[in-house]
Length: 350
Image (cartoon, rainbow, N blue to C red; front, side, top):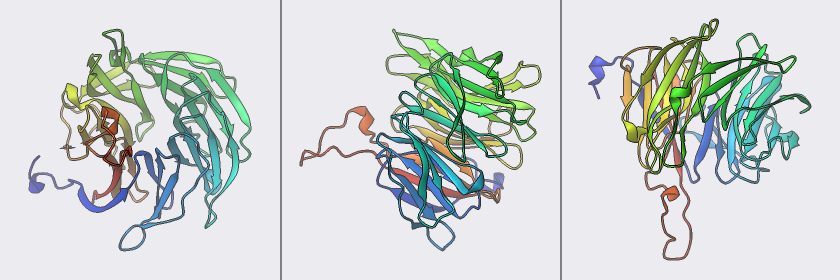
């Protein structure tokens, strides 16, 4: 890592939030006062970050499987989803948020990603059932469901609010119209897929638009082999008007794995959280299309979430312990299975 004097905008750690359970996704609240995290024990955890130290608030319970996603919508609503397919809407304006509506099976299995329309009135999700669903935030009414095309991981809404996008394992990015549910076109990110050793490897894990809404950022991995999966964190850029790929960049080495989350910064640059073979993970900050990133930090093991504060000056990244139980750790001497745990790091970008 370069010296701080060579990197005037290098992020500086200012706080850490220890979580006894693994975090799937963490986000700032729209007013920047809270951090909210979806955790593997099915609980939505919250912290007030307005004081000198983060203060834990009451938790939100009601999910059965892993809580996988969280997203803030219009009207002071919070959406959360889980690995059993439940989608819940909370009235976050209340001091003790209560569920407004909940669909036990918004998806048949794992709810993998969530996006909001620009007006915050509709929530878009994709799941293990390869469907893309659109629900009204106010009452949970299902307004649109389109059959997917792939093992879906990521969804997005076009900047004008008129289109839906979804992508997954095989690198096909499909676009539909929101109003009619008609298929519009496919974009090709198949470089992020490999069939190796009787295994599908790779996949698109995040779809974002740049700050101008002209380019689609497609993040995931360039797979090198299956079995013990090896993949290089990768981003592809598309000119959204033409649908043509305008650049592909790889970050790190095969053991560094996948880009799991990406956020566009106020400057138009973007920050990524990566996770690879157990113990590997990075925070990467870069300009779109740049040959080399402005900043890489490999201290964030198995990082799955990154989010920008409303002031544009603070960033959070959630990492997971290096000794992952996903790698077959045995029970402890008391016969207990000690699950993974996460740390949410708050960084100053100013």
